[in-house]
Length: 494
Image (cartoon, rainbow, N blue to C red; front, side, top):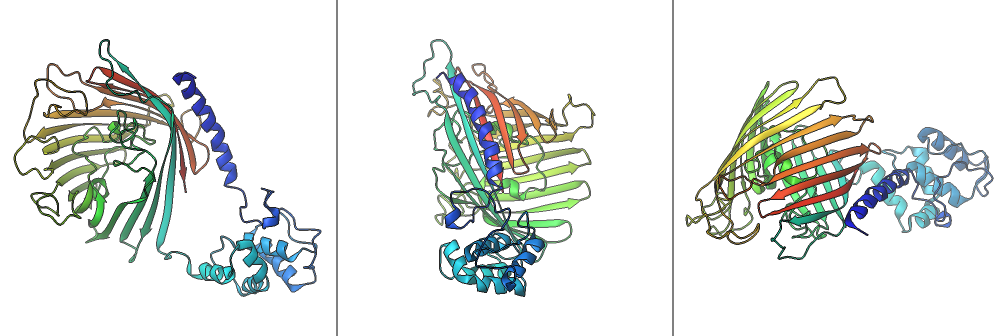
């Protein structure tokens, strides 16, 4: 099958998966083992035996069903003890609290519930969990899983054959994030994020690939579950907030993110408000302060990438040998408009004065405008910005090797991007997006062709927790080749 045919089949397949996933969320997955062949929730419990309408348990179950609304009809006939236990399990599965009568039912059907749950002592555990909860009552857990089916095709200029094997097959990738947010005073926040993905280093959609997607982590995941973030945020005063963490990202400590684009991201290069080097999203040990008063906000922060390494020649927090980024941001936020200026200084632990692309100063100016045109054909939001990067020492090589080679010029660069979004486009809840901008830093060099990135996507809300987003994109490179691709992204939020 040709690639373009595969790309056409992929959206259709994902379109089928989405409603199946939505229906699956409605199923009762805690049925008795004897009913495992059926996927339907118990709707009526008539014509059963062993537990009769005259029994107190039957009457208690009737009240339970009415109280929790967990069956289509209240019990009006006899039932077996296992059917009664299955109904009890289903009704109390998500209950936050139980009363004395419900506790008595749990005790009455202890044996049957233990069989249903597949372990001994299940009722004692369940009762404990009802009252105490598996997490602290001040901890919130949320998650997101993204399925991405897509491919990218590289087209080389005449006379410029690829030295590496083509990677144009359709791939099916996932990325899952679990976030735990805890508060101890009501004003503070402890954040822990766990993340895993099956994208591998060097693949087209990976962070170091030819068309990196924002969906995937910045480092090789390869199915390994890792702590992606671990930081604590607390108020110093009404206007001042502090953040400190062993694994915190630059944007976690900024008072403002100056762009609402993209609402459903595709190409990574178009997600930095145009200031890609200044908004580097560096992750490591760090701390920062954010001040907000009225429409004005200001942030100052640092991130040490090797903050967990004790050797001062190659790591540590704010050492000469460690890679440290220091950023400052000043922003104005109005009702419909946000404007932010940012400055970042990065040293990459460069102590010998050699040329280093990650030893630089960077500036950026970005804005986000929530429009009020009143027409479905005009964008509801416009985001854009520009950024400049000044390396500490420029280096030009006589014979430049292709992207990713050892002899890539290290020069001052600038970036830009513009993103447009149409909310409720065609269908309420759906969003159309278009982005354009620099694919990588542009350099003032006569032999350098400014590479561009384009993307068009349409996010469709299947339900409150599921969106399906088909997208097409093209990335032009300076190495005499362009990459064109398409994908379908399905996002599950839970």
